[in-house]
Image 1 (cartoon, rainbow, N blue to C red):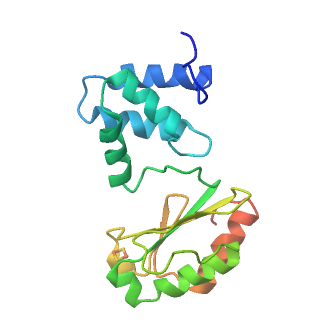
Image 2 (image 1 turned 90 degrees about the horizontal axis):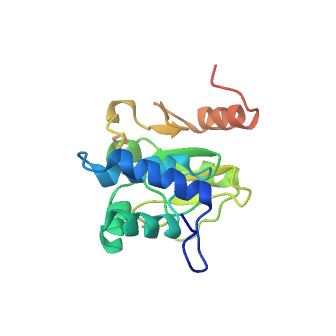
Length: 179
Ligand code: FES
């Protein structure tokens, strides 16, 4: 198949993976979610580019606006390239009352990320310029008894404080798995 015309053509490998993914999910329940999840996972920076979303729209005949409404609705989808490691801090009520705001501040300082429009924002998603770390927030992990909760590379940590958060960052920096 020829590359898509225009300035934002996908790489052949990316197209080929997208074709296989679309055929594997076509006609199955949750078809679009499955396709988008697989495509995001496949990308080294774990995100969905405008080009891939356009490609999915073209191949599935699902309107692009509908695809965007799905990816913006579900917190798991990323529209920006993500860091190699992701640290996600819960800002739900239970975690907030147990200090998640301080954890967020500490993490932001440790990673050297700007405050930006964090205040009042529903969710935060910032990535360091070297794309090593992404810092995110979530409304609730559903683990409120463990508040405050932080997720590091998809692993949940409960009862976090600034010291234990710093320790987890050191583990990532040292490139080793949690002991
Ligand atoms: S409020 Fe943080 S896990 Fe529910």
